[in-house]
Image (cartoon, rainbow, N blue to C red; front, side):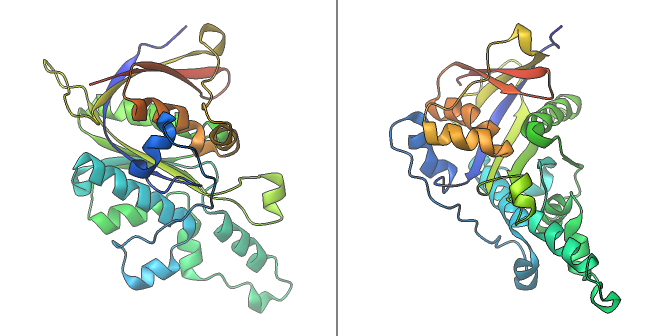
Length: 279
């Protein structure tokens, strides 16, 4: 049985990934108006962090902060006021690898773990860096649901927006593991997506170009259409390979600005059916 649908308004979007420099630059590609050009993801260091912290922060923290900042800017939202949901299927793989190497050293004297590495090893490190950097004391949730991490994050964000009736920042990001973990868990590159979501206004219709409405239903896969693929073959490969890229069909619909139905897998055997309603 499907769960009663929940609706939210999309106020802002952030995107960085392979061949997708930013949400603004990627919209023509996502609409199908320009060809997708595969290229390694370029992840900028956050200007919100002090120089020392910028050097210590790994890619997992940088990508999450970059798309969070971009979504808040796109929404014209003050990040200090926003609660957040951060979701990732893997966390900081490079840091995990280095910790394993350190702890596996045969010489006990070489098994000392640096405080920074330990701090960055926890799954909510990106959320912690973000909230400290923007001075936010709002509530934050960090979660992981393997390949369904974006869907899990969206479900959590929907529930919180409806419960609190306030805007919220959703951030989904993934970074590759180094070898030998890369062979077991192959993520080809880094990708991050962020959405600023808000309650649907009562008695009025959103009229901003970036204020489209999502009506989201959680239902059994057998009662829903198949998962929505990306229209571009290379983007579809990203969608299948990087969990955070499961958001790409939704971003395609937002970029086109027309009514659409997007189906994204959640925890099996459930899916999210998302009706995208133009402003």
